[in-house]
Length: 166
Image (cartoon, rainbow, N blue to C red):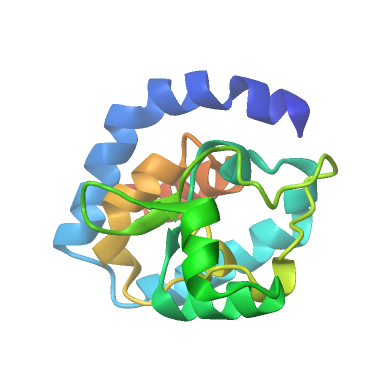
């Protein structure tokens, strides 16, 4: 995985325009069974991929924290929600609650999440490649191909399976 991760930014940059066009076409006219295909590709990829070998998302990208996330995580840490927000979060330019600093303070040296059981919804769903109505999040997917080797491989396989969108 280290080699994949090391080469990922360059590979994603080289494929960025092709992927942008491909995902844009999917967004405009999604195939009827796109969500079924995405669920299959996601399942197959994550049977081969162990996120503990990578952890790049936790080192480079912070999730959005909903009020439900904040309450659940604060309770798990035996903190009041306000104290959790003050210690770990900030409000970004869009008004969302995000981590103050990266890498994620809950990421261990072994890439294990210390709050895994109660992690934010955005973390549970990352890289969002099995999400319903996948065609609605193509710009997020494009961004994730530069962060997550599995997302990159899923998009590459999508292009092989849907050549009419290239």
